[in-house]
Image 1: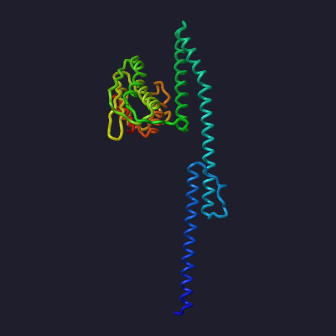
Image 2: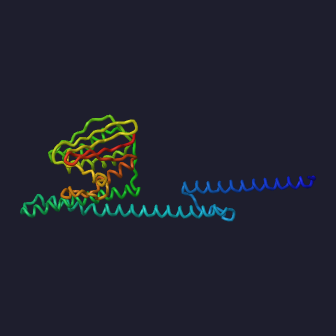
Length: 299
């Protein structure tokens, strides 16, 4: 091969190498541009106008359009949440006074000297007003949790004060029904939001009192390496195995307890709270012998 041929081969080789290097540089710049887009999207500062479309590859252009749409969608979601927050606040505010008045006036009527039939009607009016108050309060809390308006703030703390607060809240109600509400002292701790976890436990204890006619309701806690377990056990009517997975559904009520007061939202709210803290609830029950609700919280 003569020198001219060798020179041509070398020039072709150098040209090919230059093309490869240029393509690699172009690809690297494209990836850097996409990475910059992603960083801007994650910080909420992405704007398609920041990019010169003429120097973008087709992939970058499509990606920019996609992120712009995602940013717009995120803004729409935020606006919808603000609307929901306002609506929930209005519902809570507008219904609070009328329901409070219904309860007040029905209590005043209960103190009056009335015929037996009228007394029964007043008692029914009071119970239904109380049921309506509980339903509105529960739905407002649930809506705030589900829409992220209320954020749980779990912190590591001892479980004993939490359990004592729940027992103190329901001791009188249990005593009025002739039930014993017992707390086993514990040194266990976990990571939880005190206020909302107390709300979840209160709903479970309230159900235990409601569906237990005689016997004892026991609350205890056990500590493990990675989590703590709170047990709320009763000697009530129990739950059939076929219904145990259904009782945590919103507004679900067993046919066996239709005569009892309730709206079927307490356990659903409890599960939402506990799962929001990184925990979970399960139930073990034998019809006619009682139930044990176990709440698992991370440590």
